[in-house]
Image (tube, rainbow, N blue to C red):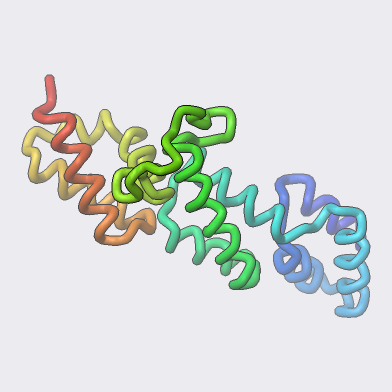
Length: 182
């Protein structure tokens, strides 16, 4: 059974709940599953905090999502609510410290620690801008600025960004880009 759990963990890091569900569905007894989970945790192969942080970092890098969507994804993976709250709080703090960067390597050493909090982008704003940047070519083909803004807003809303963030970032990106060149 430990082999089955290890094969499941080979693909990517998993939460404790995911591994437990997988082993239970495979027909293993609950007491054996609990023992395997305990052993994998002792070995450091299962760690919900590390999993949640890696999940959020991966999402921010590859498939930006809003905080609400990240919370739902982590909840679906079986991560407990207090841990989700802690990881998302750390994400918000990191966005302020890194001044919109995507990793500590991109930290802005000249960032003003006393900067006006209204001008410092939130983690969701940074992720929303990154998502729209990925779709800039498609959005740029839309000639009407109002339709482009609506499309950008819809894209952000589908990816878990709140109405305030989606509206502000969509408006900002459309206003910055102006009419398309082609």
